[in-house]
Length: 385
Ligand SMILES: Cc1ncc(COP(=O)(O)O)c(C=O)c1O
Image (cartoon, rainbow, N blue to C red; front, side):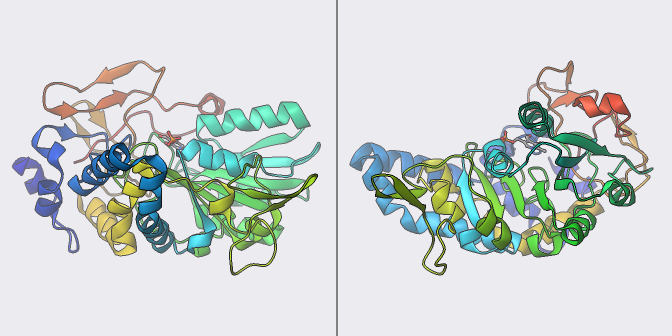
Protein backbone atom coordinates (compact mmCIF):
# COMPACT_ATOMS: atom_id res chain seq x y z
CA UNK A 1 0.00 0.00 0.00
CA UNK A 2 2.82 2.40 0.87
CA UNK A 3 4.44 1.73 -2.50
CA UNK A 4 1.18 2.78 -4.12
CA UNK A 5 1.09 5.98 -2.05
CA UNK A 6 4.57 6.83 -3.29
CA UNK A 7 3.53 6.42 -6.92
CA UNK A 8 0.41 8.55 -6.55
CA UNK A 9 1.27 11.90 -4.99
CA UNK A 10 -1.38 13.32 -2.72
CA UNK A 11 -3.29 16.29 -4.08
CA UNK A 12 -4.33 19.16 -1.86
CA UNK A 13 -7.77 18.52 -0.49
CA UNK A 14 -7.55 14.76 0.02
CA UNK A 15 -5.74 13.26 2.95
CA UNK A 16 -5.23 9.89 1.31
CA UNK A 17 -3.83 8.23 4.43
CA UNK A 18 -6.82 9.36 6.45
CA UNK A 19 -9.23 8.18 3.77
CA UNK A 20 -7.53 4.78 3.66
CA UNK A 21 -7.49 4.54 7.45
CA UNK A 22 -11.22 5.22 7.38
CA UNK A 23 -11.81 2.42 4.87
CA UNK A 24 -11.56 -0.96 6.63
CA UNK A 25 -11.28 -2.85 3.33
CA UNK A 26 -7.95 -1.14 2.59
CA UNK A 27 -6.34 -3.35 5.22
CA UNK A 28 -7.57 -6.44 3.43
CA UNK A 29 -7.17 -5.85 -0.27
CA UNK A 30 -5.73 -3.65 -3.02
CA UNK A 31 -9.08 -2.82 -4.53
CA UNK A 32 -8.91 -1.88 -8.22
CA UNK A 33 -12.59 -2.16 -8.84
CA UNK A 34 -13.83 1.21 -7.59
CA UNK A 35 -15.59 1.88 -10.87
CA UNK A 36 -17.53 -1.34 -10.28
CA UNK A 37 -18.28 -0.89 -6.60
CA UNK A 38 -15.93 0.96 -4.28
CA UNK A 39 -14.87 -0.07 -0.80
CA UNK A 40 -17.14 1.92 1.50
CA UNK A 41 -15.86 4.12 4.30
CA UNK A 42 -16.54 2.97 7.83
CA UNK A 43 -19.33 5.56 8.25
CA UNK A 44 -21.36 4.04 5.41
CA UNK A 45 -21.15 0.49 6.73
CA UNK A 46 -21.93 1.71 10.25
CA UNK A 47 -24.98 3.62 9.00
CA UNK A 48 -26.33 0.54 7.19
CA UNK A 49 -25.72 -1.73 10.19
CA UNK A 50 -27.19 0.71 12.70
CA UNK A 51 -30.28 1.30 10.59
CA UNK A 52 -30.78 -2.43 10.11
CA UNK A 53 -30.39 -3.01 13.84
CA UNK A 54 -32.92 -0.26 14.55
CA UNK A 55 -35.40 -1.89 12.18
CA UNK A 56 -34.99 -5.17 14.04
CA UNK A 57 -35.61 -3.49 17.37
CA UNK A 58 -38.45 -1.08 16.63
CA UNK A 59 -39.94 -2.18 13.29
CA UNK A 60 -39.38 -1.02 9.71
CA UNK A 61 -41.90 1.81 9.56
CA UNK A 62 -40.87 3.16 12.92
CA UNK A 63 -37.20 3.05 11.93
CA UNK A 64 -38.13 4.87 8.71
CA UNK A 65 -39.91 7.57 10.71
CA UNK A 66 -36.79 8.04 12.77
CA UNK A 67 -34.65 8.30 9.63
CA UNK A 68 -36.35 11.37 8.15
CA UNK A 69 -33.35 13.53 8.97
CA UNK A 70 -30.86 11.11 7.38
CA UNK A 71 -32.94 10.99 4.23
CA UNK A 72 -33.10 14.78 4.02
CA UNK A 73 -29.34 14.84 4.47
CA UNK A 74 -28.97 12.46 1.54
CA UNK A 75 -31.11 14.63 -0.73
CA UNK A 76 -29.29 17.76 0.36
CA UNK A 77 -25.85 16.23 -0.15
CA UNK A 78 -26.75 15.00 -3.64
CA UNK A 79 -28.27 18.35 -4.52
CA UNK A 80 -25.08 20.12 -3.48
CA UNK A 81 -22.96 17.60 -5.33
CA UNK A 82 -24.80 18.14 -8.62
CA UNK A 83 -25.73 21.81 -8.34
CA UNK A 84 -29.40 20.83 -8.13
CA UNK A 85 -32.20 21.35 -5.62
CA UNK A 86 -33.60 18.75 -3.30
CA UNK A 87 -37.00 18.55 -4.98
CA UNK A 88 -35.30 17.75 -8.30
CA UNK A 89 -33.87 14.49 -6.98
CA UNK A 90 -35.33 11.04 -6.55
CA UNK A 91 -33.63 8.22 -4.70
CA UNK A 92 -34.17 4.96 -6.55
CA UNK A 93 -32.78 1.48 -6.02
CA UNK A 94 -30.11 1.64 -8.69
CA UNK A 95 -28.88 3.69 -11.62
CA UNK A 96 -30.66 1.58 -14.21
CA UNK A 97 -34.09 2.03 -12.65
CA UNK A 98 -33.39 5.73 -12.22
CA UNK A 99 -32.60 5.98 -15.91
CA UNK A 100 -35.70 3.90 -16.75
CA UNK A 101 -37.92 6.31 -14.82
CA UNK A 102 -36.77 9.07 -17.14
CA UNK A 103 -36.54 7.20 -20.43
CA UNK A 104 -39.79 5.25 -20.29
CA UNK A 105 -41.64 8.48 -19.42
CA UNK A 106 -40.54 10.14 -22.66
CA UNK A 107 -43.44 11.00 -24.97
CA UNK A 108 -41.93 9.28 -28.01
CA UNK A 109 -44.11 8.42 -31.00
CA UNK A 110 -43.71 6.88 -34.47
CA UNK A 111 -41.25 8.83 -36.57
CA UNK A 112 -39.48 10.41 -33.60
CA UNK A 113 -35.72 9.97 -33.37
CA UNK A 114 -33.39 9.23 -30.48
CA UNK A 115 -29.74 10.25 -30.81
CA UNK A 116 -27.26 8.28 -28.77
CA UNK A 117 -23.54 7.49 -28.73
CA UNK A 118 -21.48 4.49 -29.77
CA UNK A 119 -20.31 4.01 -26.22
CA UNK A 120 -23.87 3.93 -24.85
CA UNK A 121 -24.46 1.64 -21.86
CA UNK A 122 -25.83 -1.64 -23.19
CA UNK A 123 -28.95 -1.67 -20.97
CA UNK A 124 -29.89 1.77 -22.22
CA UNK A 125 -29.48 0.71 -25.82
CA UNK A 126 -31.70 -2.31 -25.20
CA UNK A 127 -34.39 0.08 -23.97
CA UNK A 128 -34.07 2.10 -27.19
CA UNK A 129 -34.49 -1.07 -29.21
CA UNK A 130 -37.59 -2.04 -27.25
CA UNK A 131 -39.20 1.37 -27.61
CA UNK A 132 -38.22 1.45 -31.26
CA UNK A 133 -39.94 -1.88 -31.82
CA UNK A 134 -43.04 -0.86 -29.83
CA UNK A 135 -43.55 2.66 -31.11
CA UNK A 136 -41.67 2.96 -34.41
CA UNK A 137 -39.06 5.33 -33.01
CA UNK A 138 -35.74 5.62 -34.90
CA UNK A 139 -32.36 5.31 -33.20
CA UNK A 140 -29.38 7.18 -34.64
CA UNK A 141 -25.87 6.72 -33.31
CA UNK A 142 -23.64 9.80 -33.24
CA UNK A 143 -20.22 9.03 -34.77
CA UNK A 144 -17.05 9.30 -32.68
CA UNK A 145 -14.29 11.82 -33.25
CA UNK A 146 -10.63 10.86 -33.52
CA UNK A 147 -10.36 10.62 -29.71
CA UNK A 148 -13.13 8.04 -29.45
CA UNK A 149 -15.55 10.57 -27.90
CA UNK A 150 -18.90 11.21 -29.45
CA UNK A 151 -18.47 14.05 -31.91
CA UNK A 152 -20.70 17.09 -31.13
CA UNK A 153 -20.30 18.41 -34.67
CA UNK A 154 -21.46 15.13 -36.12
CA UNK A 155 -24.34 15.22 -33.64
CA UNK A 156 -25.28 18.70 -34.86
CA UNK A 157 -25.40 17.41 -38.42
CA UNK A 158 -27.82 14.67 -37.35
CA UNK A 159 -30.28 17.08 -35.73
CA UNK A 160 -33.68 17.78 -37.19
CA UNK A 161 -37.19 18.36 -35.87
CA UNK A 162 -37.79 14.64 -35.41
CA UNK A 163 -35.04 14.32 -32.79
CA UNK A 164 -37.00 14.29 -29.53
CA UNK A 165 -34.32 12.89 -27.27
CA UNK A 166 -30.55 12.88 -27.02
CA UNK A 167 -29.52 10.18 -24.54
CA UNK A 168 -25.86 9.45 -23.95
CA UNK A 169 -23.49 7.95 -21.41
CA UNK A 170 -21.08 10.49 -19.95
CA UNK A 171 -18.31 8.08 -18.98
CA UNK A 172 -18.76 4.66 -20.57
CA UNK A 173 -18.46 1.65 -18.30
CA UNK A 174 -15.26 0.51 -19.94
CA UNK A 175 -12.41 2.34 -21.55
CA UNK A 176 -12.08 5.50 -19.49
CA UNK A 177 -13.18 8.11 -22.02
CA UNK A 178 -15.26 11.16 -21.11
CA UNK A 179 -17.95 12.20 -23.57
CA UNK A 180 -18.57 15.95 -24.06
CA UNK A 181 -21.73 16.23 -21.98
CA UNK A 182 -21.87 20.04 -21.97
CA UNK A 183 -21.54 20.36 -25.75
CA UNK A 184 -24.44 17.96 -26.13
CA UNK A 185 -26.42 20.01 -23.60
CA UNK A 186 -25.97 23.12 -25.74
CA UNK A 187 -27.16 21.21 -28.78
CA UNK A 188 -30.22 19.83 -27.00
CA UNK A 189 -31.17 23.24 -25.63
CA UNK A 190 -30.85 24.86 -29.03
CA UNK A 191 -33.05 22.15 -30.57
CA UNK A 192 -35.53 22.08 -27.67
CA UNK A 193 -35.32 18.28 -27.38
CA UNK A 194 -34.92 16.33 -24.16
CA UNK A 195 -31.47 15.35 -22.94
CA UNK A 196 -30.92 12.30 -20.72
CA UNK A 197 -27.43 11.75 -19.34
CA UNK A 198 -26.25 8.46 -17.85
CA UNK A 199 -23.69 9.73 -15.36
CA UNK A 200 -23.30 6.46 -13.50
CA UNK A 201 -19.51 6.46 -13.91
CA UNK A 202 -18.88 10.19 -13.63
CA UNK A 203 -20.77 11.30 -10.51
CA UNK A 204 -18.29 11.53 -7.66
CA UNK A 205 -15.33 10.97 -9.97
CA UNK A 206 -15.30 14.48 -11.43
CA UNK A 207 -17.06 17.76 -10.70
CA UNK A 208 -20.50 17.89 -12.31
CA UNK A 209 -23.01 20.70 -12.49
CA UNK A 210 -26.38 19.90 -13.98
CA UNK A 211 -26.94 23.56 -14.87
CA UNK A 212 -23.71 23.72 -16.88
CA UNK A 213 -24.42 20.37 -18.52
CA UNK A 214 -27.94 21.44 -19.42
CA UNK A 215 -29.48 17.97 -19.13
CA UNK A 216 -33.14 17.30 -18.41
CA UNK A 217 -32.36 14.09 -16.59
CA UNK A 218 -29.22 12.67 -15.02
CA UNK A 219 -29.05 9.18 -13.53
CA UNK A 220 -26.39 7.68 -11.33
CA UNK A 221 -25.50 5.26 -8.56
CA UNK A 222 -24.26 5.45 -5.00
CA UNK A 223 -21.88 2.52 -4.95
CA UNK A 224 -19.08 3.67 -7.26
CA UNK A 225 -17.25 6.96 -6.77
CA UNK A 226 -19.51 8.12 -3.95
CA UNK A 227 -18.58 4.93 -2.08
CA UNK A 228 -22.13 4.53 -0.88
CA UNK A 229 -23.95 1.25 -0.34
CA UNK A 230 -25.12 -0.98 -3.16
CA UNK A 231 -28.85 -0.71 -3.78
CA UNK A 232 -28.77 3.06 -4.17
CA UNK A 233 -29.33 5.06 -7.32
CA UNK A 234 -30.73 8.48 -8.02
CA UNK A 235 -32.27 10.63 -10.72
CA UNK A 236 -32.05 14.38 -11.24
CA UNK A 237 -34.77 16.11 -13.27
CA UNK A 238 -34.73 19.69 -14.53
CA UNK A 239 -37.67 22.03 -13.87
CA UNK A 240 -38.76 21.55 -17.46
CA UNK A 241 -38.68 17.78 -17.11
CA UNK A 242 -40.61 17.94 -13.84
CA UNK A 243 -43.29 20.03 -15.46
CA UNK A 244 -43.55 18.06 -18.70
CA UNK A 245 -42.63 14.42 -18.12
CA UNK A 246 -44.89 12.03 -16.24
CA UNK A 247 -43.26 9.05 -14.63
CA UNK A 248 -43.93 5.83 -16.56
CA UNK A 249 -45.81 4.36 -13.62
CA UNK A 250 -47.16 5.71 -10.35
CA UNK A 251 -48.21 4.43 -6.96
CA UNK A 252 -49.55 5.67 -3.68
CA UNK A 253 -46.29 7.46 -2.93
CA UNK A 254 -46.46 9.27 -6.21
CA UNK A 255 -50.06 10.36 -6.46
CA UNK A 256 -53.16 11.04 -4.41
CA UNK A 257 -56.39 9.22 -5.24
CA UNK A 258 -58.66 12.25 -5.09
CA UNK A 259 -62.04 10.73 -6.00
CA UNK A 260 -63.39 7.43 -7.32
CA UNK A 261 -62.07 8.05 -10.83
CA UNK A 262 -59.47 10.79 -10.42
CA UNK A 263 -55.96 11.15 -9.08
CA UNK A 264 -53.41 13.90 -8.77
CA UNK A 265 -49.69 13.52 -9.07
CA UNK A 266 -48.09 14.89 -5.94
CA UNK A 267 -46.41 18.25 -5.85
CA UNK A 268 -44.15 19.80 -3.25
CA UNK A 269 -44.95 22.82 -1.12
CA UNK A 270 -43.34 25.31 -3.47
CA UNK A 271 -45.10 24.28 -6.61
CA UNK A 272 -48.82 24.48 -7.20
CA UNK A 273 -49.00 22.18 -10.17
CA UNK A 274 -49.36 18.48 -9.51
CA UNK A 275 -46.48 16.15 -10.08
CA UNK A 276 -43.66 18.47 -9.17
CA UNK A 277 -41.86 16.51 -6.56
CA UNK A 278 -40.07 13.80 -8.40
CA UNK A 279 -38.73 12.41 -5.16
CA UNK A 280 -42.25 11.87 -3.91
CA UNK A 281 -43.44 10.58 -7.27
CA UNK A 282 -40.70 8.00 -7.41
CA UNK A 283 -41.61 6.75 -3.97
CA UNK A 284 -39.12 8.14 -1.49
CA UNK A 285 -39.00 5.05 0.67
CA UNK A 286 -36.56 5.01 3.49
CA UNK A 287 -34.25 2.03 3.56
CA UNK A 288 -30.95 1.33 5.32
CA UNK A 289 -28.97 1.77 2.11
CA UNK A 290 -30.66 5.01 1.12
CA UNK A 291 -30.29 6.53 4.53
CA UNK A 292 -26.64 5.47 4.61
CA UNK A 293 -25.94 7.23 1.32
CA UNK A 294 -25.79 10.44 3.31
CA UNK A 295 -22.71 9.07 5.05
CA UNK A 296 -20.97 8.38 1.75
CA UNK A 297 -18.77 10.51 -0.47
CA UNK A 298 -21.76 12.57 -1.54
CA UNK A 299 -21.33 14.34 1.80
CA UNK A 300 -18.01 15.70 0.61
CA UNK A 301 -19.93 17.34 -2.21
CA UNK A 302 -18.24 19.33 -4.89
CA UNK A 303 -14.96 20.28 -3.23
CA UNK A 304 -14.33 16.56 -2.83
CA UNK A 305 -14.81 15.80 -6.49
CA UNK A 306 -12.49 18.62 -7.51
CA UNK A 307 -9.81 17.23 -5.24
CA UNK A 308 -10.40 13.72 -6.55
CA UNK A 309 -10.14 14.87 -10.15
CA UNK A 310 -6.93 16.74 -9.35
CA UNK A 311 -5.49 13.64 -7.79
CA UNK A 312 -6.49 11.50 -10.75
CA UNK A 313 -4.72 13.86 -13.09
CA UNK A 314 -1.58 13.74 -10.99
CA UNK A 315 -1.31 9.97 -11.06
CA UNK A 316 1.76 9.24 -13.23
CA UNK A 317 0.85 8.44 -16.81
CA UNK A 318 -2.68 9.68 -16.38
CA UNK A 319 -2.47 12.31 -19.09
CA UNK A 320 -3.67 12.33 -22.60
CA UNK A 321 -1.64 10.31 -24.99
CA UNK A 322 0.75 8.82 -22.45
CA UNK A 323 -0.19 5.30 -23.52
CA UNK A 324 1.78 3.50 -20.83
CA UNK A 325 1.90 -0.23 -20.45
CA UNK A 326 1.98 -2.13 -17.21
CA UNK A 327 1.45 -5.54 -15.71
CA UNK A 328 -1.63 -6.84 -17.49
CA UNK A 329 -2.88 -3.39 -18.47
CA UNK A 330 -2.40 -0.97 -21.31
CA UNK A 331 -3.71 2.56 -21.60
CA UNK A 332 -5.40 3.79 -24.71
CA UNK A 333 -3.36 6.40 -26.51
CA UNK A 334 -6.13 8.38 -28.13
CA UNK A 335 -8.12 9.45 -25.11
CA UNK A 336 -8.10 13.17 -24.32
CA UNK A 337 -9.88 13.08 -20.98
CA UNK A 338 -9.21 9.82 -19.27
CA UNK A 339 -10.74 8.62 -16.06
CA UNK A 340 -11.17 5.44 -14.09
CA UNK A 341 -12.89 2.53 -15.66
CA UNK A 342 -14.87 -0.49 -14.66
CA UNK A 343 -12.65 -3.52 -15.17
CA UNK A 344 -15.47 -6.01 -14.81
CA UNK A 345 -18.04 -7.04 -17.37
CA UNK A 346 -20.62 -9.78 -17.11
CA UNK A 347 -20.81 -12.28 -19.92
CA UNK A 348 -17.42 -11.40 -21.34
CA UNK A 349 -14.28 -13.45 -21.14
CA UNK A 350 -12.47 -12.19 -18.09
CA UNK A 351 -8.85 -12.09 -17.32
CA UNK A 352 -8.74 -11.84 -13.59
CA UNK A 353 -5.96 -10.10 -11.76
CA UNK A 354 -7.53 -11.42 -8.61
CA UNK A 355 -5.26 -13.15 -6.19
CA UNK A 356 -5.14 -12.93 -2.44
CA UNK A 357 -5.10 -9.28 -1.49
CA UNK A 358 -5.96 -7.89 -4.93
CA UNK A 359 -9.53 -7.06 -5.90
CA UNK A 360 -9.83 -6.75 -9.67
CA UNK A 361 -11.58 -8.36 -12.57
CA UNK A 362 -10.21 -7.17 -15.87
CA UNK A 363 -12.00 -7.35 -19.16
CA UNK A 364 -10.37 -7.35 -22.55
CA UNK A 365 -12.88 -5.53 -24.75
CA UNK A 366 -15.53 -2.88 -24.35
CA UNK A 367 -19.10 -4.20 -24.40
CA UNK A 368 -22.11 -3.15 -26.42
CA UNK A 369 -23.08 -3.84 -29.99
CA UNK A 370 -22.27 -0.33 -31.15
CA UNK A 371 -18.63 -1.32 -30.74
CA UNK A 372 -19.10 -3.71 -33.63
CA UNK A 373 -20.40 -0.83 -35.72
CA UNK A 374 -17.16 1.01 -35.57
CA UNK A 375 -16.78 2.38 -32.06
CA UNK A 376 -13.22 3.53 -31.81
CA UNK A 377 -13.01 3.08 -28.07
CA UNK A 378 -10.15 1.47 -26.24
CA UNK A 379 -9.69 -2.25 -26.10
CA UNK A 380 -7.79 -2.37 -22.85
CA UNK A 381 -8.53 -1.20 -19.39
CA UNK A 382 -6.24 0.88 -17.29
CA UNK A 383 -6.10 0.46 -13.55
CA UNK A 384 -4.84 2.90 -10.95
CA UNK A 385 -4.96 2.97 -7.23
C1 LIG B 1 -22.55 3.69 -17.55
C2 LIG B 1 -23.38 2.85 -16.62
N1 LIG B 1 -24.71 3.05 -16.56
C3 LIG B 1 -25.49 2.32 -15.75
C4 LIG B 1 -24.97 1.32 -14.94
C5 LIG B 1 -25.89 0.51 -14.09
O1 LIG B 1 -25.80 0.80 -12.74
P1 LIG B 1 -26.72 0.00 -11.70
O2 LIG B 1 -26.15 -1.38 -11.62
O3 LIG B 1 -26.62 0.78 -10.43
O4 LIG B 1 -28.09 -0.03 -12.24
C6 LIG B 1 -23.57 1.08 -14.95
C7 LIG B 1 -22.99 0.05 -14.08
O5 LIG B 1 -21.84 -0.21 -13.99
C8 LIG B 1 -22.77 1.86 -15.82
O6 LIG B 1 -21.45 1.67 -15.88
